[in-house]
Length: 135
Image 1 (spheres, rainbow, N blue to C red):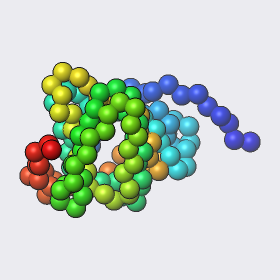
Image 2 (cartoon, helix red, strand yellow):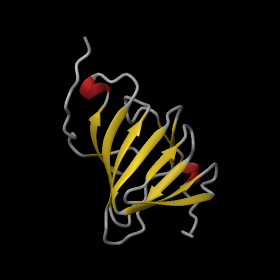
Image 3 (tube, rainbow, N blue to C red):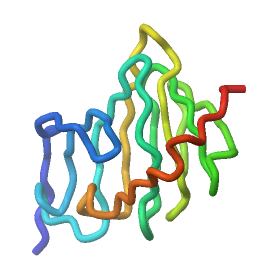
């Protein structure tokens, strides 16, 4: 019989994308086969590296603060997600989140259809020069 498990967020680490993550539910922590969850903080003034998640969808809930995100093939689209908002990112969509605030961190809960959080991350250094001014 499958076992239900209570998990505390793990030790903070800096992800491939350059953000502070605390893993919780994953293949490593509970033997998950199809999902992971983590806490992710975007410190004030920090921008992640452009990336996508190969073949995996992402759902995000913003606990506090707000984040901006450029997304699309050339990061030509822009959105803002605030405390209390949910955000859905389809699989394989290039994106680059950042915190435009110089004083308030953005704290989020992330769930992805990849039980091994960092394995599906594909960095997109060719998009690093694609920096659009926030609208």
